[in-house]
Image: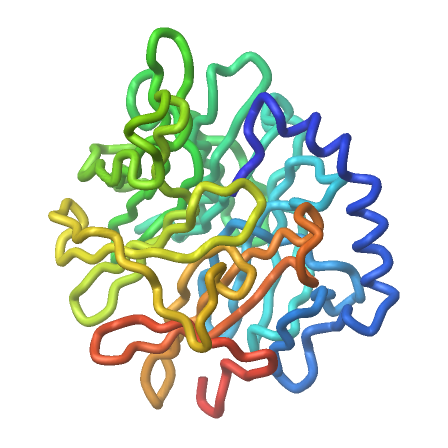
Length: 357
């Protein structure tokens, strides 16, 4: 999910006052919690960090360094400044604010929209690369940005800005890393007769060995799967919020519908090779049945290895500050696998990290 270039700042101005008041009210209400009671995740609440401030982290990813999970995401509060935040936790419930790693100053000053960030570690150097969707004044549309730091919480420097294909811009992106290789999944825009048509397909690009640019496109498909072929081109749309996870030799490519800030059902496709062929989209089963992924938009699936096996964490974005539906901006749920089929299970309170994890 992201703000469209032409409407983003207008939408923020129109809605931010009422939305911010609702967030402030929630902070003073018992529904806002420090998600930190002995490692127990509390859903349907507004999460606070360990200092008691609202967690502002949507549309990102997580990586694990030793016993610490790092969660990177962009600020979608009504008074956001287009910045990327970093949080850390040992139990996935209590999150401390590490810092804002991408700010709209200095070398990032021309970027007014920084969204959908992912963190990966550069092979060989051990440096960290933050890869995100970027837009700036005077740009034709969104590019992929690459920023590098010596430490995960260090000072990031802009290393590259590019369209993944010449003159072709992107929507939502995410990054999948497997060993020394990394890949960008992107919703792709098309330009037809001088006009940009948003999110008409989804593609996978392999990155260069230094993770600072695109090497080649491996796959593009799912064109117009959410659109209406008998309608005008601007209503031909695909999916967004893409993310890939691998289990038992099979890649699962999850995505959400193109519905703005609203929540949606999650769908996925499968393949044994990132270059395809990919299956048709399938609806992610939920327990109990939910028509909107328990009022969330799919963000990512995080495998967590432990002595008892692998737990899969579904991270969902809830943009209640924009929709006025539900409470909170973040939801963590277990994704269970039943005979190779993923099932998203609702739990209001639960703990991910058990003994030995």
